Image (cartoon, rainbow, N blue to C red):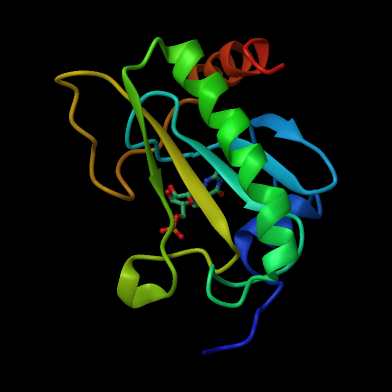
Length: 140
Ligand code: 5GP
């Protein structure tokens, strides 16, 4: 497998070089709105510790990350009044990964609303900002 390369776009977001619509941040993770949402309320949770995929992640970092994924997932489901949550993680391009920094996709799902394709149209910043605020309001 290729080595981690910190020129990727999520590493640049972590360094503050590129803006994001933030939902939550602590010492373990950063959560922000996906710029090309596949459903309303599509959130990305990215690890702060550098790894390219799930496959090369430090198990200790993963065990700290997963409770955050659950907490932010619960908040997204509550904020969107969703019926469920799709959790996606792609490791390597063959599996669909396009940004090579470990991240989880949280997609609040509603009955009868299909998921749009990966890498669809870009959402308006004000729409993402309003959704992030609603999700933040549901975080304990
Ligand atoms: P992957 O295919 O690597 O699992 O997912 C990468 C995700 O990052 C995609 O859903 C894509 O829409 C999102 N994305 C790519 N570039 C940016 C960006 O600059 N900002 C944000 N917020 N999301 C991004």
